[in-house]
Length: 130
Image (cartoon, rainbow, N blue to C red; front, side):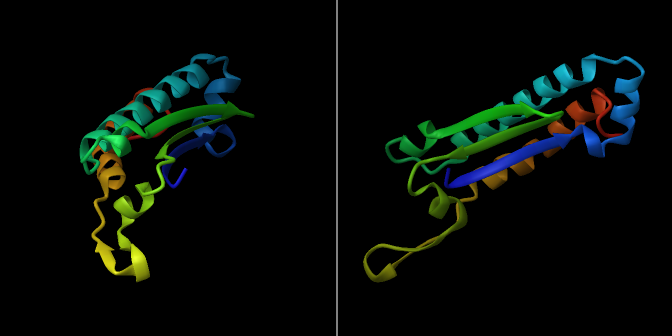
């Protein structure tokens, strides 16, 4: 993928979650996967809305993935469209790099606008406090 955002949680780094797991709480890993999945879906949807639109190829090319392995849950949002990165970050392109594209930050803006919602989801399941 050329443009990506990820959310990662590692139970080895979260003291309070480990204590909850030791006390028999089985809900945290499942709840965490649900929270991460909901978060990347929100980001994906907003990134598609924010993406520059001509034919809709970039909008349709934004996808997500959630992986669980070894106590970690990681969510990814990105695109494998060749021009996704330059649209996100800006830069020079074209013959002899003659065209300057301003950064659109379609993914960055989606991340920024969803941070409060993500924090609240993680707070509700005890991953973060306040």
